[in-house]
Image 1 (spheres, one colour):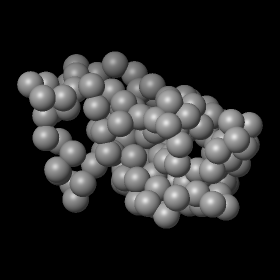
Image 2 (cartoon, helix red, strand yellow):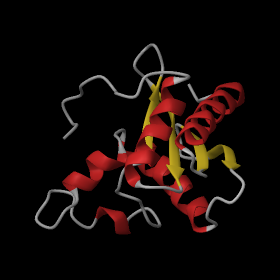
Image 3 (cartoon, helix red, strand yellow):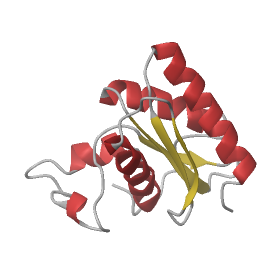
Length: 144
């Protein structure tokens, strides 16, 4: 099942509220389970460069079923995923992309946020994801 437009809008509203609470301007992207853009919001004065980053963080998270910060840890030099950011027309492997998992443990989409520190990006993305679901997939034997 894909994230619905109503869910995507709720996720963006929650993420936007968290960004406002932190006093920052963000770009917020929600993608469906296929990595297709479902909804997007650019807050006033958010960096133009963050548009692409937010979208790619969401796609990266949904493509690999994990938070982008986790992929970043695995993709350091000498790591098992070193160089992965060059695949799939470019991925983002630092925090701010989080899977959206439904009540059945199925990934329905992901959210990506960019525009501040990676710590703030993660907190804002987490607020959006948790507004409509969970953020962790059940354990699978193929997962790293």
